[in-house]
Image (cartoon, rainbow, N blue to C red):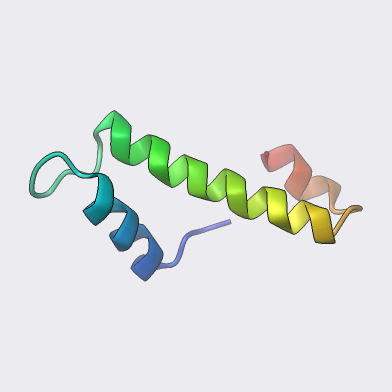
Length: 56
């Protein structure tokens, strides 16, 4: 699952430690947490989607 640009930019703006910060642990953890939340909700609806489950 790829985040759309607007969502990713919003997460980076919220958790950045300085301008141009995209690699700090805080930002990376926030982006990965968002992906995990999305997959968790997706798998609640699509219980037999085993390929996406491997991504989790």
